[in-house]
Length: 296
Image 1: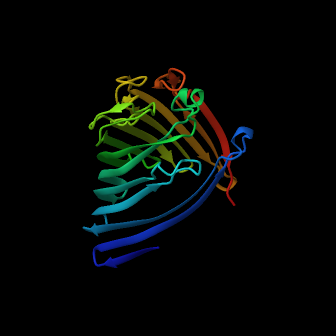
Image 2: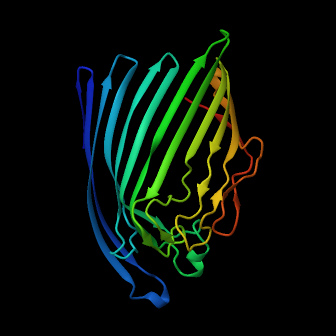
Image 3: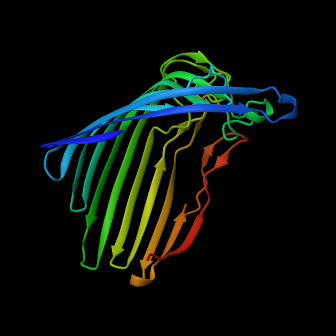
């Protein structure tokens, strides 16, 4: 259920979502004929937001939302669902191709949940923990996201859209605990959450005319911790920060559709993005996509 109420320069939105989950698990393995589990989960997820318009181009906003991630059907009842409270507040401006947005966010996890997967650790399979879920308790994630965009028109024949997006994130555990999950280990309150970069930056520059357009996008990803606490593999190790350049282009044939080209990692640079589960893993190599779209 969701409803929006407008009152002069104010706009209020209220909503609530409910989920009823009735899950059944039964193992089909020959040596686990009696392994089964039935669970029921019910949750109410309210949300509210407000926007105040200064004029037709700018305003401030704030919102609060309840977060929820269920456990999988095979997880034991002692594994708690993931719950969080998500808050955001900010300022937004848009006028004739010029855009400015500044948003602060805070996510208060009452219980963070993670899974042991093939991308997490090789031990998930060797020790029989594949798809097993773990609880970490309270975690705080907060930061700021900003966006600045402008469309320049130096000539009548084409425009130059430019945008800059920067995100600063801090994520840390609020409780001390010991876990046999391979990303956590012996965690002390204040330790960082693994694989979440502190700095992210995207710079985009394009050239657009009536029938063609092209865009170059440089993305920066800051270093990331590969483990939270002590006593586990890769404790204290971080992935290096890196840049990646992408490009895209398209040409419209008016009534005959359009052809497009997209190249991810244009320079074919190689960077380490993780050292799990079987050693250093690189980013995606150069990918080239060539396609045609037709609308009717």
